[in-house]
Amino acid sequence: MEWPEDDKAPSKFALTTLRRTMSKKQIVRIFKERYRTERVYAEMKGELGLDHFEGRSFRGWHHHVSVALCCYAFVVGERMRHFPPSARRQSALGPHPLAA
Image 1: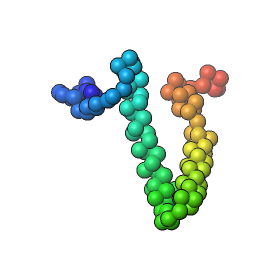
Image 2: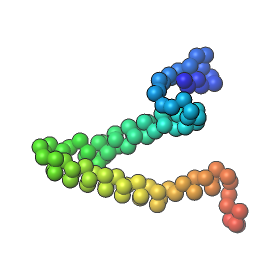
Image 3: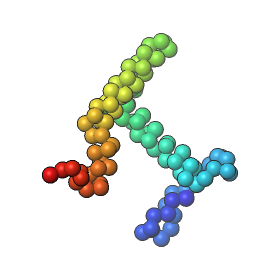
Image 4: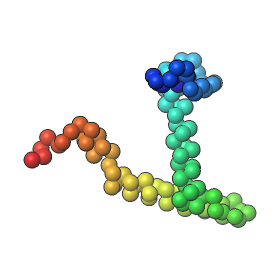
């Protein structure tokens, strides 16, 4: 259940069949992973043409999906090169200690 502080009642509910021994943190992480997966799928369909395949053979479909995944890996690599996570973390902490 997700209950934002400003709301009067919970806004989102989820049922799961995960093990009872899992911590709440693990369950939330697995549940939120679905959002990331759907976002990647939508981005690949919209920008990289994952849904443009109109062939009928598995070999052709496999080739098309492999190329789309390679293109997505390249895009993610370029994003990481231009916007590294450490730079975001550093800017949140303030200026670099060695900066003049």
